[in-house]
Length: 449
Ligand code: PLP
Image (cartoon, rainbow, N blue to C red; front, top):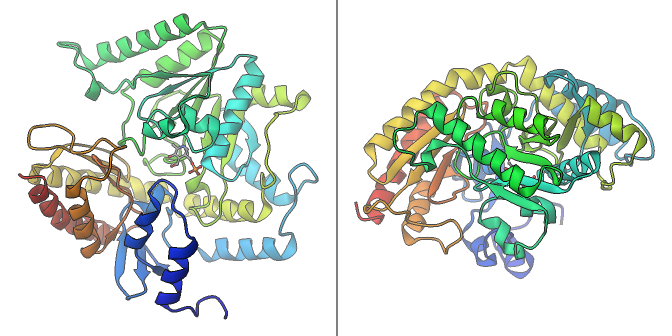
C-alpha cells in the first residue's frame, strides 16, 4: 500500500508494536495525537482537529508548515542533481554558498563552518574544536542549560537530563547562571550582582586551573530551562575572562539562533561580544531537514588547516539539507522575519504579563522576542513539579485543556513556554493566548487556587 493509505487503526496498532519514545516513557505515545498534515502555523490530526503550534514543536519549526516555494524547489533540485556527497570526498557549490552566507551574516571573523546534522553533534564538534585548539580539556557550562543528547553534549547539559547517563563523563564543570532571579544578595544593584557572578566564574576558573579549562560553553539565552536572559554586561565580562585565560568562548544558539529572540543570533543582544564558536541547528532549516552548524573564528579555522578536527559524521555537510538551509536563511533575510519578530515581541510580552497577572498559578514570567516562559508555583510558593519527577496530575489536566482548546506544544513543568513559529500573524498570536488563557484556568483549579 502506498504511504498515506493506512487507517487510523493500522497506524495505532503498528505504533503500539514498534514505536519507542525518547525523553518520555514509551506509553506516552498512546496519548499523543495522530498528526496527518500541517498548514501555516497549524497542525491537523486524523479527526480533522486543528492545533495551533504554540512552541514551534521543539522550538524549531520556525516558518510553520507551508514551506516557501524556493526551499521546496532548491531541495528537490539538489536531491535530483546530487542527493549525497560525503563531506571529505569532494566540494560542492551548495556547501560553498551556505558557508559563505552564514559567514556573511555572523558578525566579526566567525567564518569557519562545519555542518553536522543535529544540535548535539554541533556541540560535540565545538567541544572537540576547543579541546584540540587549546590543548586543554575542561568545559564550563551553566546549570539549567541543555546542550544535547550525545555523551559530551549531555554531560555539558546543566539540567536533569545530564543525570540519565550516570553523570560520569569527566571534564565538565558547572557554573551558576548570573540571572538575579536565583540570587538573593540583599541590597546589591543589578550591576553589582553581575560583577559578583563574573567574580565567581573567575574564581571557579582559578580553582579549576586556567591551564585545564578549554572552553566556557553556554546558551546565549537558556531556552528549555526557562527563557533566561543574561543580565547586561555579563557576556562582555565572560568574553574578557576567556581572553585573559586563553579560554574558548562558545555560544550555543541551537534553540534561539536564526531569529527567535528578535536578533539573528541571541548573543547579538550583547554589544560588542564575538564568541569564538557559535553553534546553531533547528532554525537553520526551520526543521524541514536535519542540519546544524558549528562556526568558528578565523584563528581557530586556521589552526585546523594544518590539523584534523578529529570529529566527523557521514552526514556532515549533507547537500540536500544544505540546499534547504541556504534557501531558508535567504527567506528569513529577504522577508525580514527578524523585523516581524521585533514587531510582535511587545504583543507577546503584553499578553504574557496579562496572563501572569490573571492566573494565580503563575509565579513569574520572562520573555525576549517571540520566546516567552511562565513559571508555575503551588499556592504555598513551592514548585509543583521538578522536571525529572513523574508528571504532576495538575499538568495532566492542564495538558488536556491545552489540547482541547486547540494548542499543541512541548511542556516542561514548572516552565510553560510560548514560542510560536516566527511567521505567526498578530491575530494568530492573540488567538493563541486566548486558547492558553482558557487552559490556565484549569491549571489554577487543579493546583488548588
Ligand atoms: N542545544 C540547545 C540549546 C538545545 O535547545 C538543543 C535541543 O533542544 C540542543 C542543543 C540539542 O539539539 P538536537 O536536539 O538537535 O541534538
